[in-house]
Length: 437
Image (cartoon, rainbow, N blue to C red; front, side, top):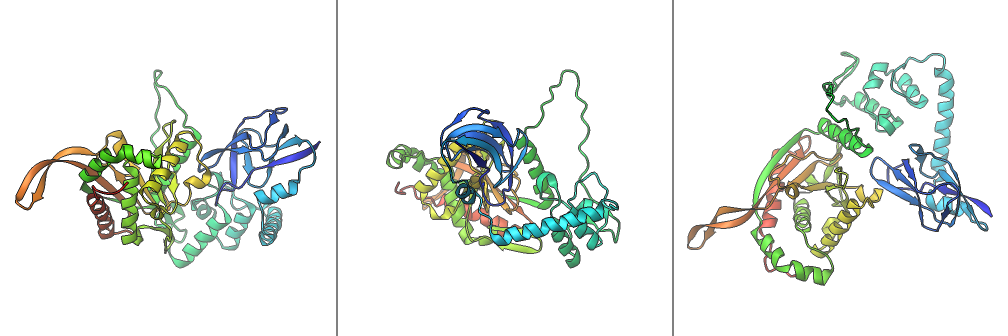
């Protein structure tokens, strides 16, 4: 018998830690190979960690609500025979030698700073700042009020080394966000007004936000603060699409093994329009516009809890309609069953949300950062409409819907935002009613 350390595996780019939400197994329980042991949550998605080996749970190293780091052990298992732990650890979290050296240097620097700041700390604040961040602030002459004004991207909004360096660069280039009034004028941060205090009555029910709802709330507020939103609306005739789907949905499922909804058709039109207007498929980094090479389309999906998540179809332009249907159905099913992986919701470059599912015809969606646009598709309704014919105009019943296109006015002007959504409408209206399945 020997001990085996269960390591928190890599969960995708940018995810460095996770919160333990529930231990599925208790100490002394037998664990089969590839059986889930613990449930975890990141700021992206909930997931679970399976054991790569069979054994007995001997010790739990990270309790519920504790923070686990990627590549570090979270539990110890007793296994029969000898297991090559080193191979397992390396395959799970391989760290380059240069990165190890850089981390060691950073730790050494922080240790020195601790000694310097222990007796004379000019950055006394309710916020936590690491010794390294405090050291950089001191070296660059950043005041305590300025440091408090920096929006952190670390855990719990903590200011990281990259955050403070970005602030220093923006300050030197004169490109600080308008919400920050630097100390040369007055050391004040323009913050949104505090939410009004609500005093519940005796009959009111108080419901605490769950972890995901808190994250959604923070992300939505940040998105509105970062990007000036503008929304354009276009009405589109989707009669051909409705008639084609009604005629072919049974045969489509029989041939491809997938149900055909409207979403794959919408995504197909969006990817074509992005190829026509690639500056919609960008993100903003300070004064730089990053033009994305891949077209990764996110589709907003409601979870059983009522919360919202946005799984992403990577390289959506490379799939035909049947391939898109398979991707859409797979992600939707796994979203409803809380089976999405962190990588499933990363890397989106453009998002579609179907508000028509709830009977809504128009909407003003919020752009998920760091994307610069989002499309809301409304409910399809029958309407009387003017139909042009070779012998004159007639009134007929048509299937109509609205497209609501919200975009970031920092980099997407009205002309581009309006032309893009109009192009999406044109592709939808030009849908071939004789299209092969």
